Image (cartoon, rainbow over all chains, first blue to last red; front, side, top):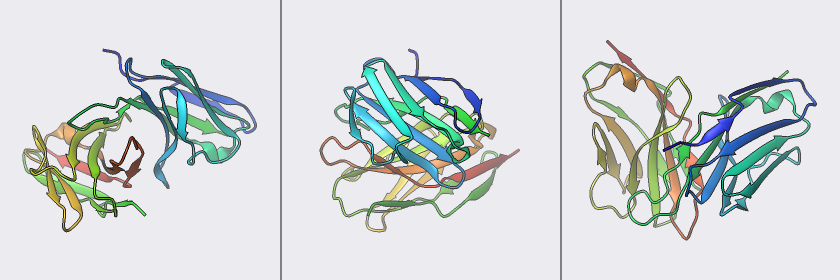
Length: 117
Length: 116
């Protein structure tokens, strides 16, 4: 089975440019998460969706960040305009609500490494 | 507020020996889950093991086991018979299991190096 697929794997851009990160969750998973990882702050949850609906976006840093999930198989995280402090690895993860066991461990994509110059 | 603390920024272990990675947590919720993830140098996050707060026994998954001490609020990961491929960052995380909450609180991680 295909795992969570993220693109691009690497992105280098200049300050002020728009950045769009993409994610395809595992088929059948009804939760999708966007995380940001930096050395200083570790893993931060930005936003998560359930059945394509945003549930908690309290981690979105500011209005420059937006996320959408138009359907069950696709999500985007957009940064506009980008700033050097946005440089990080952005992970997408998906899970499904289950019964018994871990009931929703996260399956992560390989991450998108963003560098804003 | 919920919090995860991993006090060991870095650990070393000799190949084939066991190692314990510490994790303490703080929560006032009676129902919660504890997770451990591995992040090798390639970057992907890999789920290792889960412990529910009401589970009667410590979780085990192959060479991984979780030393769950509820009264002390600790959930240490034990890796037995370490292998070179175990060298990675290890993250402890916690989730309040009330309702349909799916938000994880993460520790800052422990870097494990396995020496040949």
